Length: 232
Picture 1 (cartoon, helix red, strand yellow):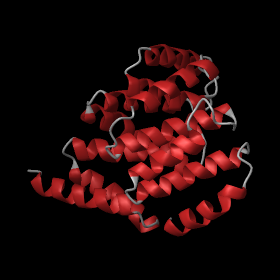
Picture 2 (cartoon, rainbow, N blue to C red; picture 1 turned 90 degrees about the vertical axis):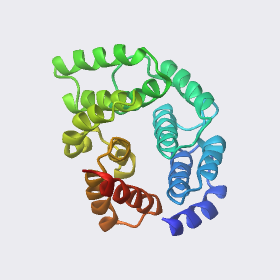
Picture 3 (cartoon, rainbow, N blue to C red; picture 1 turned 135 degrees about the vertical axis):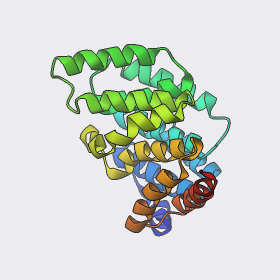
């Protein structure tokens, strides 16, 4: 991941800023900074290349990149994100005022949960209506992910685990890349760490570290082992 960050950081300055790839590849650079523990660096990339409403790449990508990066920064413990969340909430309400594009909708849930907005209930009702009509492509899994995110944001870690854990095999149904979808597993891991389920978190993290290295996951692994040792 560090090698990718170096390559993209050197290549992107010459790339057209209005391109979809410029913004989204900047998002990948920010993820690599986050993985290395450089939260300020990740936020700096967000401010320069992703932050709405001034980003020039397509609204779906701006919205989902912004919401997912802020959520990951929140999971990492970055304080002071409230003004950024309010900007993204306003952007999402403007471009995605009703349920429809499900990839936007699951990210809308992140924003609404992070800001404590009552609009999440409306969005869930709209998604349920689409699912009942057979017009929600990922089916009930998308609704479940939104409910799990809400429980997590409310501090109900046990309920978040109960909802999210069985949905992990179905996350692929919402689309996007593995890097984009990993956010929901990240949330489940942090819910396990916060909820006193270190053994469960450790198993998930171990599986991930067998696939690829990650300084962030190694830190979570140490935290999970400490938590597991305290479990009765």
